[in-house]
Length: 281
View 1 (cartoon, rainbow, N blue to C red):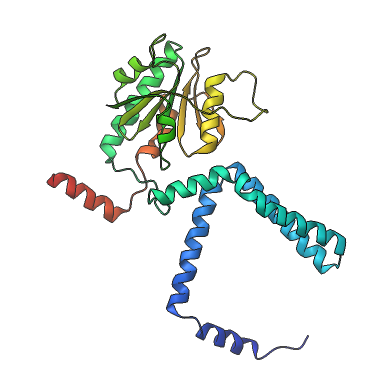
View 2 (view 1 turned 180 degrees about the horizontal axis):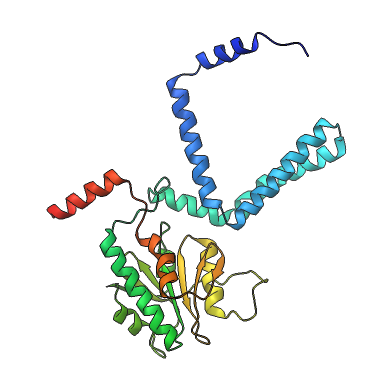
């Protein structure tokens, strides 16, 4: 194969046409694509994306091999998939639109609580889960993260109280109006209790899992919340996240699991500014 000595010149000419505005444009697109990847990573949508990539790859290969019938079928399938995408990706699209509306699309979920306040909230939740586990009292505690759960909180009873172990234990007293359903935690406040959660449609789950666990998994499939579940039958503490249920937590592992929901990865400069502003207040 003859060597193309003009290739470096062509590359240099192409690079010379790139302006600072083009670089800015590329950076924005890259940030959006990365954020989209973060949102669908470890979700059911990622499996759908892989399926779409397989269809696109097959279409290119069949076109290159001149397999006209297969190419036509795959192209028509792609057209129908474009129509079906809004339905298939409904939870992810909804989450993205909510993040845009809340101005959180490019945020990192940073908590406005300082580390000391966050640790106090974590300790109170862990203490509550331990006591509920010891008495085998069923409970659902939903820890809100970036995605606001206002549509879930309105299904229960509005409270808006400061988080404490004693307060949470009173919420989950058996045979009281607040016991059945989930408690929604936002920052250091319990905003609502006795909330109704959507049940998962996953038919491959163990038959040992009851309604609480299926509700926890169902909500975690639709948002980024952490849902702490205490089993009424065994007292086992579990956590649902991203459509998956992790079981048999103790005090130490539960604290490690829920702590990042309260102590976000803040920008250091912003964190220092916020701390100084609070000290002045």
